[in-house]
Length: 280
Image (cartoon, rainbow, N blue to C red; front, side, top):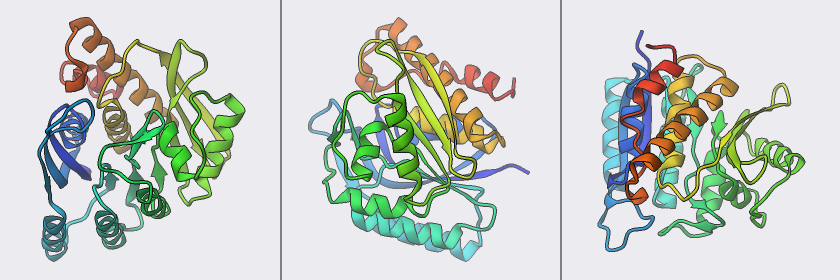
């Protein structure tokens, strides 16, 4: 039976992030993606000015009430960018209602990168996001988000023992598994670390680091991870696939020389993802 993923993200019309990344990437795995938009923006908020923003908080409640009436169910609930603490509370209600025994809840605590909060996000938001992470089976923070969730000062570089201590500390918030992105072995590499609290094991997926900053790679990575999890792969396997696919998208974008504000070329590399997922 075809699996169903509820993707709770904003729609940034330009920039290949949030729902415009989640929809094609997860769909490529043969999985139905049901979007629940939190807001509509003309572009994402990184590297652009004068972007438009329409809040959809009230619509979120009415949409999910209709789904409740229909008795619709999901195999995975995947949350990304949330624009307010009120939206965090709404998502907590959604998880409380739609999570069943076999439902996987994945929270990507989208709020910060490179040591700073994103535009329109305030420090008190981390408190609400921490509560949402308590309800998750898996969380997928980057190093900045991990520091803020743990109420620690962000550092640009972490040793392997420090990284593994962060993973274990994050697991104390509630989730059984952690996928931490932005992890590096040295200045020439970058990737992710996956932690399983039940077995107390850490696995790494490290790849070549490309020069420059590429917007939307966090959503690309998390969506590829969801696609692999929906195909019943382990978190460690899914992390490797997400790193490989994201790197492929970055390399293609670098070769094309396009403006990185508009995100990485996820579309041209979808066959790569399908190959990694053993679909083709």
